[in-house]
Image (cartoon, helix red, strand yellow):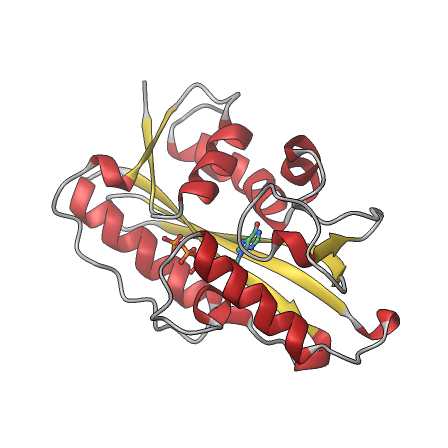
Length: 205
Ligand code: ITT
């Protein structure tokens, strides 16, 4: 079976991507299954720069087609912040995982203190880069519009999910069932746009 390597170390992203690509006749594996992949420094100024850097690094190291996701939250009242800094908004010294996630969204809630409901608009953006060993690279993106709640809501998901309420819903991504997130999220939309590209790479169309 053809193999697609996910160029991410974020376990929650891996679960979501695998869930969404489930129907394809390909094997989807995480880059952590390979040894010797160099550390990737994500210091690009755009989601595109970071996604390309991750996908190319993993393709070069594994010799396989790879898919990288670079994503983040853009809050209008903060002029688009945290954006590409979403993963390290509250600081890089906080351990990755639930502790970092909580610090990030608590910092966001603090910065938005006093900002009224109608001014709390935000969006998640996801840029996906798909790289093939021959050097071919494709980019797609997906956006999910919504707003930032006043308090954390729910325990599912990861990152800023407890404070992000997608348009058309009145609960956060962390409180909604996973299948709803996997249908309307920025990642789901970017993956949907990437399906023809993935199928093309593996000659499935
Ligand atoms: P990789 O680079 O290894 O893929 P990462 O978590 O560092 O993992 P990014 O650099 O793309 O990934 O940072 C994305 C951050 O944006 C992520 O850590 C979350 O804080 C936030 N984020 C992205 N997608 C999200 C989602 O679906 N729900 C909640 N937060 C999300």
